[in-house]
Image (tube, rainbow, N blue to C red; front, side, top):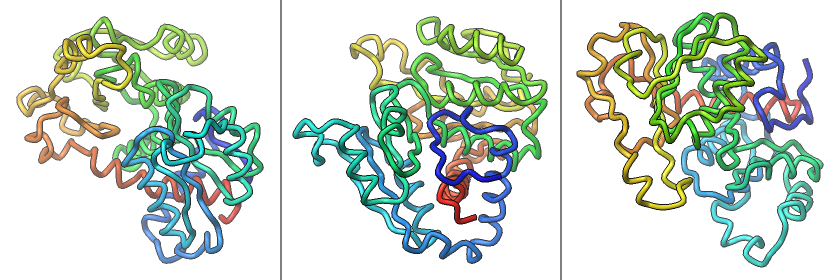
Length: 308
C-alpha cells in the first residue's frame, strides 16, 4: 500500500484499507515513539493557516517535530502575502518549492482542493470553511478504534451545530462506510445537517438516520455521543448566534443513565456545550481524543512522504 505523494482533501480520498493502515502505524507510533523520532529528518512541513486554529496547527507541528522534521508557515493570513493580494494558487506554487508537505486551513470551501492542483508536494486539508475537516475525522476514528476496539456496529449521536460543523460533515460521511452504523442527529431546527449530506449517507451506504432536537430522547441509547459547539464565526449576525448558543449543555445529571461504555467526544474547542463537571467522568474522552490526533497526523504525514 503506497500513499506517497497523495493529497488528503476529503476522508473519502482513502479506502478503508488505507485508513486502517494509517491507524495501525499511528498505534505503533504511540507505543514506540523513539522508533519514529528521526524518520522525517530533513523534511519540512508548511502550515498555511488562513483561518485561526490552535489545536489543529499545533497538533500538526507537534507531529512533525516528533518525527525529527522541521516546520515553517503562518498562522495569520494578514501577515502573509495574502494581504498584498496574492492568490492561493500562487502561494502554494511557491511554498511547494520550500517544503515537502503542506497543510492548509482556509475559510473558503474548496481552497485546499484548488491548492492540490497547483502543488508539487502533498496537500492536506486542515479544514475548509463549513465543508470538511478530514484529519479531525482520522483523529475521531482512531479514538473510536482505540477505545471501543472497533469502528463497526456503533450507534452515534451527533449533537450541536450540524449545519456549519465541518467536523461532523467529514465524520458522518466516513463512519457511514463502516458496517451497521446508526446515526442520531441532534440539533436545533435552524442548524440541521445539510440535506445533501443526509442523502449521500443514505443513498451511498444505506445508513440509518434519526433526527431530533432533544438530546434526552437518544442519549441512553447511543454508544458514542459527539458534541460540537455552535459555530459562531459562521453566523451572518450575532443575534441569531445568541439565540442558539446554549441549545445543548451536557451535564453529569444528563449522562447518569447513559451506557457505561459510551464515549463522550468533542473536536474542541468547547465553549459551554459540555459542563466542566463532566470532565472527570470516565466516558469523557475528548482530551485523549486530542492526544490521538498527534499520532494519527504523524502517521498520515509519514505515509504521504513515503517514509514508512
